[in-house]
Amino acid sequence: PLQVDFAYSIRGNGSLSLVPQAGETRWRLRSPWPSPSFQGDFLPDRRKVSASGFEAVYRIGNLALGQSLVDTRVANGTVQAGAAPDGGTATLQAGVSLMQPVDLYSQVDRAAKYGFLFIGFTFLAFLLFDLVGGVSVSPVEYLLVGAALILFFVLLLAFAEVIGFTFAYLVASAAIVGLNTAYSAAVLRSWRRAGFIMGLLSALYGVLYILLSLEAFSLLIGSLLLFAALAALMYLTRRLNWSGEEEA
Image (tube, rainbow, N blue to C red; front, side, top):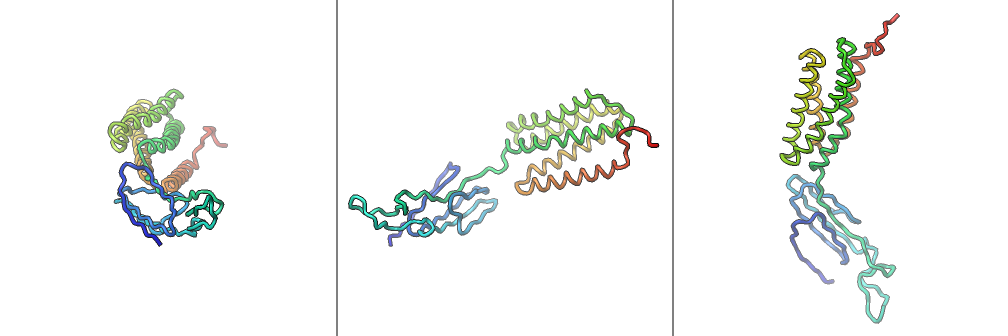
């Protein structure tokens, strides 16, 4: 059998594919990219993925291609090598794509999906102060606080395109926490109550940043944290009279 061995280097590619046609194809890949996605009809026999890059080794035999090395059928007096059994051309291939699992825009998009948590927990805190503390909070004040919470995601995207996601997150969260804390002090008529709002928002933004930094199990961890927060809230408010009516 004829053996062919060659090596090559490529720069600037987002993906690479190989269509095997030999009796036995051995393909070794090395790259400093830490997040590969192995695609195609064949997976590597051996792979090693780490923060410093990945290495993969493919070994594809002719039987896996579903074709013979030499077709005994003769067309126009020539022997067709590497043809598929039905006379067509084999299209089976092995490939790898270089993924960007957590980029700037995907992080902002994921953060926006948790926006209802910020609005819900903050509004609930104001409602508790309204029912328990006797502080009247008007619908307009709820609307302004909610608008400030939504503005966080706009600030996050705007700053992230300039200074990066981490610093943008710090700037945007600090601005919104400071704004809502100062406004809450006026609405709730107490800096102590406003401090509770500040602590609540700071904790929510801290948990959200951890979830956004995770590449794996972020949905599972977020769901468990949400369940724990809801269970704690239900337990703490189990004796609260939400209707405001006196019990007989």
